[in-house]
Image (cartoon, rainbow, N blue to C red; front, side, top):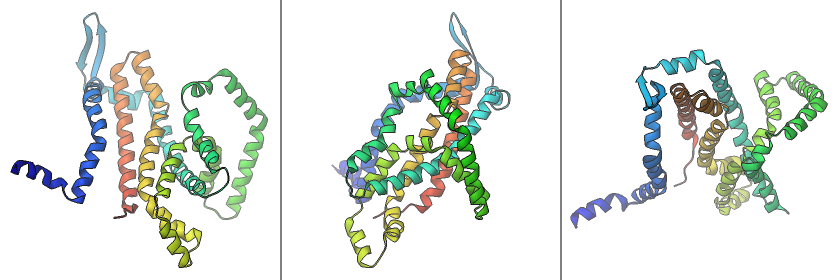
Length: 304
């Protein structure tokens, strides 16, 4: 009886109950990782440090140290190029996606006619970015349409982009900010298509904020702009961290690096080099996530 009480004691407090619920929520993922992903993960690390040859007796694994990693970083130029391009796209796209999705969530939380239809429209890219529709984007018909659009309107788009840059530079805007903003216009399709889940998460968080906070701020004379910075943004700051992690991982999963890793492994049958590329890619993701979470988590406000 005393043993049971000792086991229950850490979970009787409020903090203990939160830890217990946290363990229960992650237990399905944890069990799935242990039973389905642990062995392949260890094998991929072993393959990345080995040379693999297929024979009638099966796979012959010979330990060669870090040769595959050196080969991936110094010999295979396509891997380096695509990895750097993926990192640069994340640095540019992630802040734009977070800002756009938070802005849309605030707008869609307002009461106006057709609000439900508007919410559905902005979530449609999440549905259309999978299955048959995703394959349709790669068909020759869609490529031909995109090529015709680029041929007919490409010159006008370039001219308008240069004109916008010139106007902003003459106005005294910083050069890096100008190129970032004009680049964001060119990336509008990517930003909208990758913001559906983030909009829903922000929208759910905004709806949990007590209306009494906004009522009290209005009585005190606060404007909508001040209410956003003093109430909305601090209250949804934990969800900014969640969306940051989700967006970074989602951006990496869309990267062409994954196709290159699959091609090296299953088309060229070089599983050692493919595993080394996968681990370099994985470590790059982890470093970016750790750095991002470290800095953003300092600004997160948690309501007690």
